[in-house]
Image (cartoon, rainbow, N blue to C red):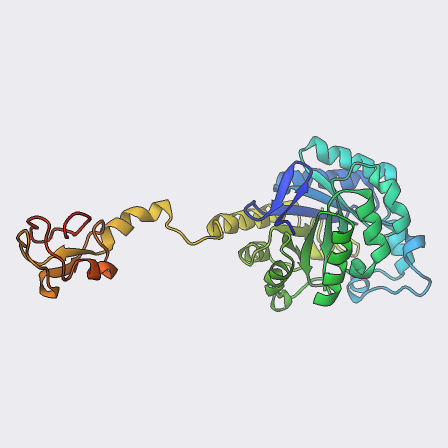
Length: 347
């Protein structure tokens, strides 16, 4: 599998800066005007993409559907009423996509209902996102793959076997894909963030892996990048105290900007996934390493013994591990004391 995935004009994955998705989600409160304001806020914060959620409450919820604890804590009392209030129709989504593209942002969408995929595919979104609970929703995943475009799949509350099965569906359908490590708790305590899951997914699947961040911290994005995240997703709001299910676990744009700045700093600090001398180390490497040097004047033709050599700075001559190439050989020319042995000095 590829270590990169293409989203619009951007390669996402190994070697690239972190790709940051500002999750508008339902923080628009059902207002297209507020959704457009949040797109502008995402651009100010330095995000690469915005994301919406597309659903129809009547199709998504059975009569027995319940609110999660964090939704009740946010003041919600009825699951159906909550989602119905937060729907955006196709026309509103099209306006958000248009505004995002005009500002140089990608637009991504989470579709919860298979029956909405075809209509949503015509709106110009750059990628699909699947919510963590839908890691088991084969009809939806295959419908998204058939519609075309990459899929970013969240993996909150999933087992590795469930992720592997979903990756198999996407791979069989030929869909470019990425995975997001996620903890399905709102907000997620720092000691439950389990950032080690990023590396576990990357090692197992070899595709771009990121982190859908539900903590309240400005630092976790940077930590996730240090742990190997190629993608970051963070909720964006206009007011963390606003009424609604996700506002309290979100960031306002100024905090999102700080979050993104830290994540990019972590990426720069990480550098390439190699171990090689950095250009800024080369002077110290040359000056501080030791060479094999002559401990005395050695005349041409003399056999060099262990007593005839020493190890001194700077580098540039034979390194100390090459003593076998000097001891027991004859001097090819007169060698002055402190001269660093190099090619041509012995025979």
